[in-house]
Length: 219
Image (cartoon, rainbow, N blue to C red; front, side, top):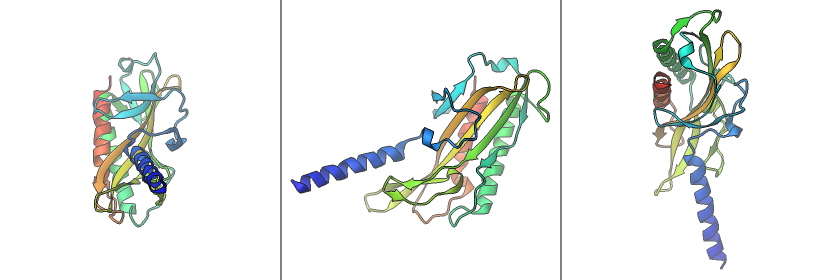
């Protein structure tokens, strides 16, 4: 009987761990505080097939705007490099994010340097950070800016790891100073072969590429 209970307990724990690892949506516990508000966020499927948490002002119509002021994306909070995430990786990731996102926005609206004037949106965004745990087994490490290491048990008993990136952003109406769109996004990058492999910016490029695709396709 004790053996049966132990097996059931082990099975339940495994299911819970796999369920937690499989989540592709940021939870409220993973919100960073960067956005002006998180009220009203709801699950929304994007053009790239990803599910994000998003709120849109019911009166918002992108056709009412023809200019956008792009405030460069930063880390929130400011991260420190680690053995697995070098300063070069952090720099490269930020540079890639800003280049791709700025280019995508410029294809939708005219980029301006000032947020004054009518028909102008202001974009502000950040790569945010959360605490990380390995598959719910035990705390693995706190990785800056949510380059989160999430473990997965393999048949050989080794742990593959998924890289994850969290982003938060909002669009603000320049004339009113009020947000018209907010989004919290969690993306999965490349799978690493072990918990010792260093994370590179290239491992997370696909997350940014999906984001820019959604910017271009947004209606």
